[in-house]
Length: 115
Length: 115
Image 1: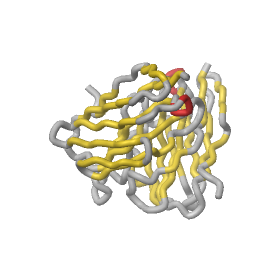
Image 2 (image 1 turned 180 degrees about the vertical axis):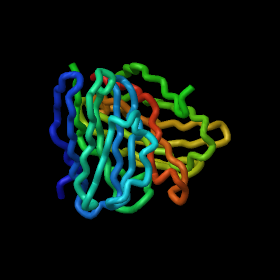
Image 3 (image 1 turned 90 degrees about the vertical axis):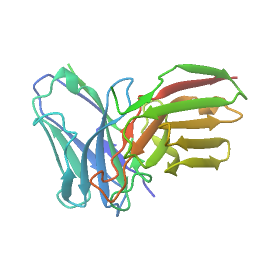
């Protein structure tokens, strides 16, 4: 009965480096969301997958951000040429069905610090 | 102006007090209203959700939604030190549309319940 897991839990990157953040959703969950939470703020939506299809990427802040979920389970959020403003906690959430707002289970997040 | 406004506090109350947390919003398309609790360095955990207007009670927690005023509240009765956390309101449109269940969060209110 594992929940959503994310790795690494903490990542320090030098400005300009590429990073990859991993999310393992709850087994069998169709929907997967990525959110970005800046210090002292609420999470902000980045992108949404329904199985392997990325149906909404309207929240990705720039073309340096890329997400994939090739087999409909594990997802990776990649940030190229990291900038200081990318420092935040990146949260992944999954839900059993598509489009359900009220049953998203969140992982612990990956705290990214760009120096 | 943000779609969802939440007073960040911080709010400090004595054990046993009734706590009132509130959010206002501007998007009339929101139909699902959630309250999450987030402990330090953890992901958000769903406390309660309400669909459309009305009240919902779960133990010491009561959620209220007034769509005519675009105002939602969470009440915590007999507050305990273990309730000390950040409380986030979150909202979403109908699942059938293009919202896909993505959540729009408030900033979060930091609550401390002291013994």
